[in-house]
Length: 168
Image (cartoon, rainbow, N blue to C red):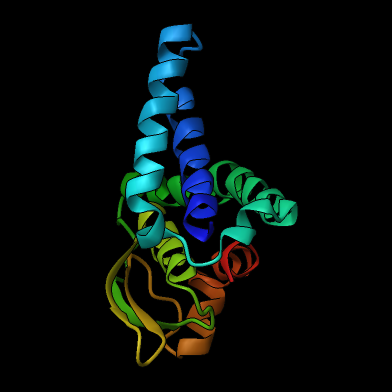
């Protein structure tokens, strides 16, 4: 019964993503999407889901949607503008370096979300993850501080706040 709950949750997410990316709601696409999502959910449920009850917690979905809007319309835009400014500046003001960014989240999904958010934001790339030391190593285009706690404030704290509420 638990596997069925996991499979339904994964299948639902896969189906929603399929419909969004296919851009079609024709009967053929909906049926095909449902079959593919069902098979994917059944085959990968035990690999991808620990606690299926999390799928039913609407506050997690609300935090996910809030995070997506903030990330794509605020954090990404600010980072793109900053990198464009650096590229177009006559002296190209950069101070690159690799910094240690500690994190406090627990789940692999939360860690992945933070690392992915950092890497997808222009000017930063996660180059290593240290699960034992609970830290990410990030190449940063403009190192402003080097103390790990201050780096966390600058680079990842907002991502961690949302990742914790969505996945932990």
